[in-house]
Length: 389
Ligand SMILES: Cc1ncc(COP(=O)(O)O)c(C=O)c1O
Image (cartoon, rainbow, N blue to C red; front, side):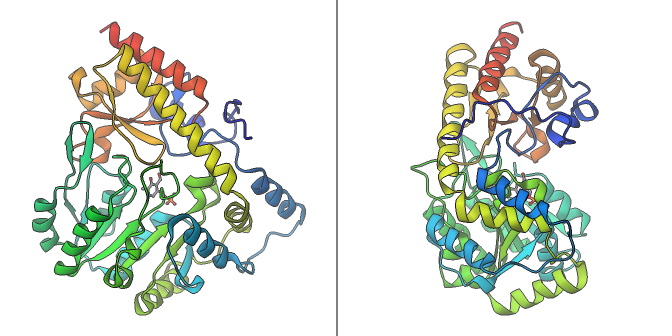
């Protein structure tokens, strides 16, 4: 059994989540619940593999170890029932670097790129930085749940060349159903869009929800998509910079790999990242199952306390990820006022919902991947601050 309750002091490790608090939130004495990594130790086998590697004192350039992409293929087969050939998958340091490479490979300057806000905010900034045009297909929020506005998507798809699907969706917490994915795929097919399917959160899904890989939907989706996955969120190794980008279509893959290796020079991997990723996929499954139970418990505890003591605030029903939206619309505050309220009245660092684009204005995003004691402390402080308003 993993002891997820055990506090681990992260301050002083140069981690963004704690050591950048002062610069970003103006204070250090906050319960830190923002950036998407976890306050939990990684699977023991990952640490052991890293120690073994560190003992060899030469850290030069690497090739991928034998079985590296095979282990990933076995993982996606087992966890997501997706059959791939190991050679379909490429390495990038991150999902965002893969997104940039996909935009550069498959779109031209000025092309429209469809996204579904409120969504992970680097999507829009990446598209804009590379001179492409963001096309928003805003999600619908109703009865505490997000869904796709298909009529709007049908219209917006006409202006776009590529669709960035966030699946599961951060921060809406949705695991898209087969029917929803099929409708999105149909729109993309009829409008000739390629799909960059960001599935970085695919492993953090709460039963009975079941993640469906976009490329596994049909022959068309397999041939027209780039699927981005990683052990980074799943096993808490984001600092090691390892992602697995699968491009089943051979022509697309060649173009993508040429840019990665010959243009951007990001196809070589980090000596420690390789070791950690392989150990995680080989040995981390039992740890992940325990993690999912713990996270579910955190989500339920937060929901229960808020329902009882601050029913104006609603935990948006989440089927996936450990970063949830809190519906704080009833507080009637602007995004700046919300940030100030959470920092100075509650004593916690969360992400302001407006950052995630249109539709996010009346939310705050909270990271619940922390010791349960912190969830309880946060919920109590929030209830007291709301009562004092
Ligand atoms: C949906 C989504 N995509 C991508 C990333 C970042 O990926 P990377 O660090 O691999 O670039 C995150 C991190 O929170 C995310 O939530």
